[in-house]
Length: 590
Image 1 (tube, rainbow, N blue to C red):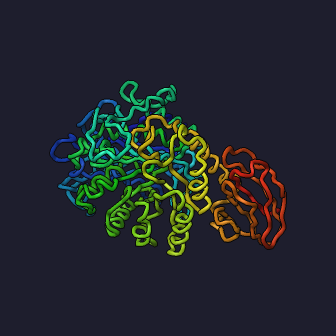
Image 2 (image 1 turned 135 degrees about the vertical axis):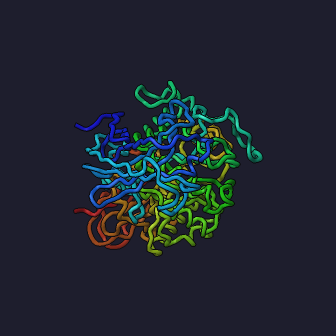
Image 3 (image 1 turned 30 degrees about the vertical axis):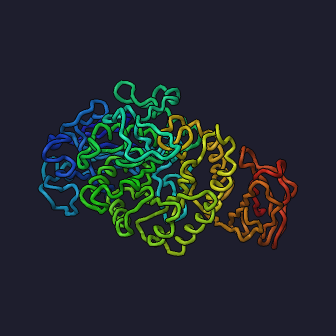
């Protein structure tokens, strides 16, 4: 019989908590030196805990962290003797563990295994048995780790399914939530307000989403967290499977998120706040929402070590990886509108990959006009797995295709996501201002997917209600979530998109998109107002079906039911609404 939720099993001097099941988080807690967030030795710099989890010949080295009293999310403890490591087993059966624990000046960020000296609980060993997961998709504990596999799409380790993103890019200060420990009631603005900008200096409450919280959902400290947890419930119900958020925006647009005890003390972390973040992240995992972790932004990418990979940056990255890398779906983004050097970006990426036991994908975001300057020097670099595009909408298709194909030629395929569209003041407007989102659907959403991209996240601009910094209600873009989910579901249900490539040369319309596995299957996106399109086909007979990208639903029949190749063939007219956008699905008959 496998342990149930919350079971704690004593194993020598160690305590295992969580569900001992494949792809579920197992937390190993040990008694170590008593320490304080503000004490000397510094528990974040001057102790290093690692745990080697092994099964047969396989070893996974997991960094550990100072956990105060082991229950800081509830107690707000700042000191204690509990140290933890979080592990996600990727196989059933017997696992062993071996604790490494060393003390010494800056030992936490030393590359030397023998740095400092071994102290208790160093050498502590034990074992535990892991059973099968009992979860169902979209819970990521059912689908398994979301991995970069050298292809254009991330892939789930358990199910073998490929991932397409339907994401929320706003608010970027998602974690500036009023019920987290250490969150100020008001934050000074770090930069001058832009003309027409709507923003607040107060933290998020997500009050409209408190009603979306359900009995049995997590909270902390007697009912805190219902707004942010309810918001995630709503997003998951709308089909959103990724959320973009900064873990540090000191001196940036929001100036209201940091993992430390205060924004200026950058080598001491707020243990209880980070434990509360973990409650939120665990709910995201259960709801099938990827953690898109933005490590810094353009205003502060020189804040740590003057932009270098120095002590403070290593400490920052290590703490985030130790606490949160166990989640099945994590994407590390080196920075929003990043201005570090090529060499620094490479150092950051390699360092993250060296520490992350699960090799989550690493990407980078840049300015709308800096793709060539930033991305080209990184082509072929093995520790960068994709790019996070910020673009004017009309460039989405061409830029997506470009970096898909350029990375293929370089011998190291990238995942190419569209994560932010301009103009900066607009992004995706609220439904109240743009109910149909026709332009964004046509020139961004389907443009990315038909270009071989990995999907989109939606940025809310800064002028409209519920914008990139002050959004309180994600229902403000309900129609955009709906249309994105429609597109993602079409690709997941109807075509082998992982075997297809952009093939615009097969159609004669410069405004339309073609995505194809030639001779097998073709997707043609026809924007609003398109004329009848001809598609150049290979040999064989093909069925022609139509799909409504505005409302979804079943495949429909147009004026042409089938065509025979080879050569250009007219696809006919849609079932109705000839001036609207349509998707044509052309499949070779078996």
